[in-house]
Length: 239
Image (cartoon, rainbow, N blue to C red):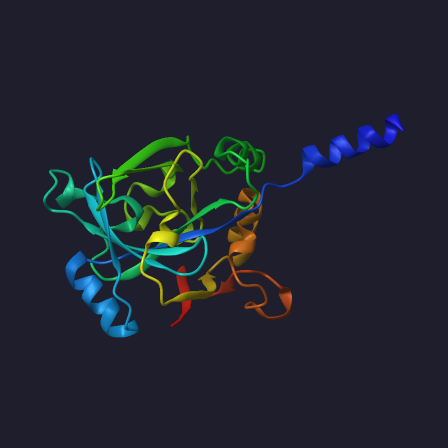
């Protein structure tokens, strides 16, 4: 009937756009040394990624399963911006998992839709921007990124990096990096601690990213974030 049709339409409009983990950001002071250390710890040799021109960084990649990968990120001192690069927490003095990136779980959902959803609950993910880099084969890998809150250094990452930045690969004609990077590791679970778990949980729900974390780690509450003295992000990998 017409009333049931209107009801279904309202339900669709209220449906949350959910996010899934796209990649983890593991920052290292020196890329060559970071890659060497990762291989020594896991037995997996990361693939060469490329340079982020204008941002002062370069990376190496490891597939963590279908649609998920690890980005080993470092300042690229061959670029003029390298010495002062800060985005995604690359200014960290030590190797650490600083934050992660999430993408719409359902095909066809645009970042602008996710942004509007989060804004309705008070979180501004920032304006989506087109980005690209050259691959080792000389092809151009393109993506759209919403990372305005992740550009001012590790100390300024939202909730210590526990809130993800966003990505959309639909503009790229190349395979997802997880399909072209070295395999051998799998992401088992993403965990986090924070002094105010409820605050972070509400922000994740607003963004649609609460399902990115493993549930039940905070006891019977079912909260995705455990209570801890300081914000901390942890990924459990299986080799």
